[in-house]
Image (cartoon, rainbow, N blue to C red; front, side, top):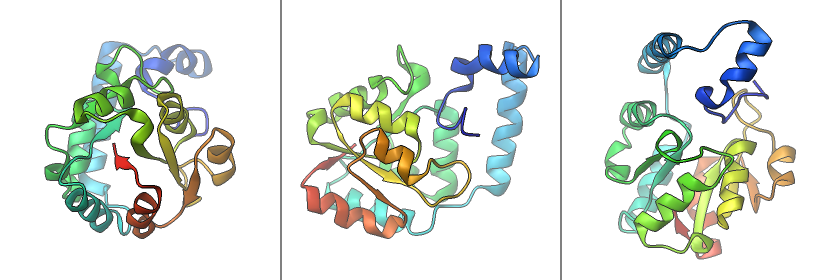
Length: 186
């Protein structure tokens, strides 16, 4: 998990093949994504307090927030719809799959900031992986690390080591964190 968390499968195909012997073909990716999407539809639940936090931030910033993910657009939209937040990001969803380079490069965050008409240095980014945090820091934004110690999220130490401003473990803290820094969300 530590090797691949926060990284796009397409970007890690050579390493996956070297470690498993499985060739990552277009057909393999299609079947993988179908299984993944089925599992997300069946099992995905919102992070505790995340929906309320995002709705508060969305209202406070009059909708000037974006979702910038390393995942493919279908996955991002599926997840946002499943937890009831798609309307907060409609028209402001950015996928690393649609950028010249995915995370840890800053391209997806720079595209989101540009679309919002905001200097990246005035943006706040919330990340739960080292790969994503590195991208946010490289974009020049203030990055807040979300870490609960659960599988699939990077730990506080690794997040702090790549330059996040602060690590938090409860999404209910997020609106106050953003207010305290006077930043715009991206």
